[in-house]
Image 1 (spheres, rainbow, N blue to C red):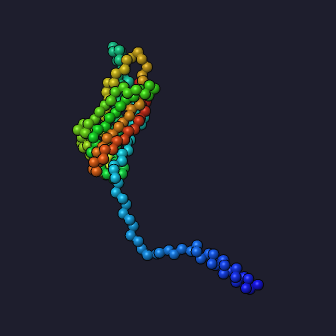
Image 2: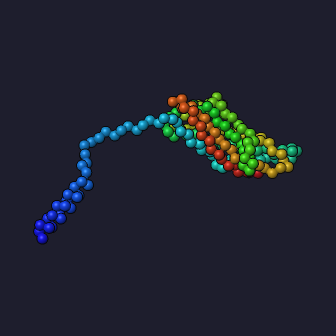
Length: 172
């Protein structure tokens, strides 16, 4: 019985040996993180949803909408760049058609924000104000969305585009 038990133990030990691994415990130098290949953008808007105020003068056949918001563009990958433009495209959310676009060039952004540059992992806030958007008084106010599109040329000469759709709530 002793021989049989020893034989079974030897086989069990032999079967277990190939499963063992050698772990090297010598210190290693961590590999540096790869640098990002291109910038990445994130867009936030306040308030969200946007709020449009409608004013309907008694003596006029039109109502006029006004909108005040702050759009913040954040670079999230670690590559800075210059904002080429920001477009605010107003769309009828029911029909899906474009009604109008407010285009801010790089120079417009620089004039409004003091710079058109976003540093790596930095932010740039722009405050577009729309006043007097006309809608005939005798038709219902349209249900609107605004597409905010940002184009940036990053420090590695990549053109990066990001768009965010924001609903518009009616006031007044």
